[in-house]
Length: 240
Length: 387
Image (cartoon, rainbow over all chains, first blue to last red; front, side, top):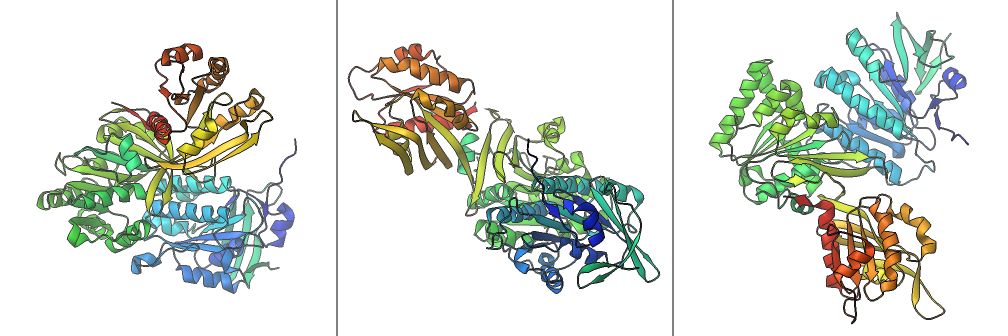
């Protein structure tokens, strides 16, 4: 029997890509990081769609316009980026959904988030999302929740766990790549460990004085050493 | 009786929702099912019912904008007798009452007051945030007669993160007269949405799932496949063409004159608020290998028999056996009823070996009304209520 080759999502971090060949389709990655640690930029670097890919950002702390600006500054093609904005509608109730920008009132509305996510996936699959076909099927989709921490401020851990359980499973089904950012210093160990259970891979970030480090856990054959890094033009650059 | 606002579903419920009923629309995460609740809300407003809408997850402005965007029509709360409790009320109650029992009491008092003062006839509640704040039993108590009168109809939407088992819980069954589960699947197609009427207190409902699409702000149930089969020259192509607004047949003119279908017949129609696709199979035995494949995922079948040709009966019986194995709703249509010397119903039943549970319709496939009668009966079998 011929085994179908799964799509591999490159991270843009040579050390990881060389060791893994890219993350396997269906991977869900937790980015654990304290505040002011470049976690947001790190998440953008991982979410930036490569050629032929799409990206969806569930934004709980930035407006859709800010998210697209961020992607633009790191050189991403906006036609392949969708944003589910859980911020803008609370102050501008009249804001209207488009194919690439969808709005829910606030992060409480998990029903709305789930529906908008499904809508975007559906339009990506049927080719109406960007008007440009990626040519790959299933279309490779990177999905980022730019703060689980914010979602946890609005909904109980147990509810959010169930919701993320569904989302991570869906992402596996569509052979996407999920990136979820969580501030590990703002929540207790139980919360972090429960969210970890849903993930395939964990990248942890720490700050020591002025330097930032990351380590990768959950990839067989890749050690969990700390690597010093900076972010340059949306690229994760390893330092010495 | 209140209409659900989705007429195909009203038929399945025996006309709609009886006054004073408790209804649960249970949404799986991600399924495009918000329009179930919204359609019922619009219908209640259309019937000039006084409504209370509890939206603890959002603001009134954002909700009104969202429903207008989904449905294409504005709601005018002042003119239409609609009152809201929204996220700001939730915040106020949380702030003032704190947690636990006091919060339940505060919600109950608030709802009771509005229901009494405004003589609320229909209460719409988005439940998942209340469930999270108050727990299952306390949350359900807000929607019971403790808060609103027995005459009030209560419609609840809930994001079901707990799975199907939660809908079988005794307290959930006790709390509702109708439970309609709205789900999505990747099988047989990606983004395949369907609903299942799990339970009604006013009838015995066959638990059957019906797919739906969202079209121009409305829920449109559809029957993705009805298979029309039968021996050669029993009138299948004519049946499909006369049943549908748009149909095609792939025919070849035989050496001896008559046309023979050599591939599938296809037809599409909108009937009784359902979008229906018909698949007609070629009748020759050499095509039998494809029949199980064509019948896969079908929701019903029509077996045509030429009522003037007794020699067809063994072949028709063979086809009947193939369909019967799948336990599909099935109608037998005995064609050419307008030609003298046709077999009677009993002779056809005996020849096919079928009992009274399978309807037999004498028809002429040339008569559109006859063809529609068969479809009407089949759609009723697919979606029927045993009352």
